[in-house]
Image 1 (cartoon, rainbow, N blue to C red):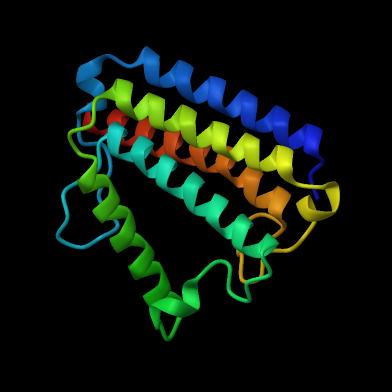
Image 2 (image 1 turned 90 degrees about the vertical axis):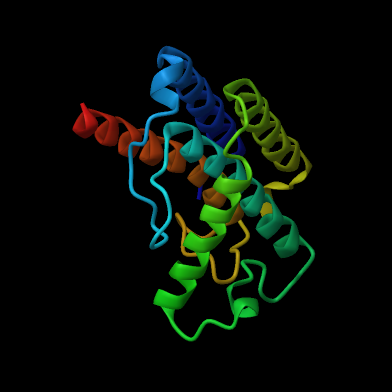
Length: 175
């Protein structure tokens, strides 16, 4: 289970690295298709789509953390979608991700960077409100990291690294 200091350090470094990489890409690269969508018959994702997705997921994790602190029995919320198995849950997640990226398709990179900054600040503000005991609480149904609130917060950093890797590989293959 990560400590508060570790979480702060990892989230700060992750954001710095993400922003440095985004700002190093020429604007045209941010608009170039780089990966296929996980949703059938949907357009491929551009780097910008991956970045808007990171905003969505960070805020989703914040909601899960808040619902856990409130004592909700299903803070992740997968049961509410009526899925019968893991494949249906994954398909639902991909559809939600696709809808979110399409809703933000025309956002400027400046807007996306502001959203990424705001989402991270919201995570840090949430972390500041949590006790050490709450950071160690498991989030029922959370399949990420060690399943604790602290682990879920750190997952935001790991998630960004994974998407940067997919973007870089996708752009390399397109060249």
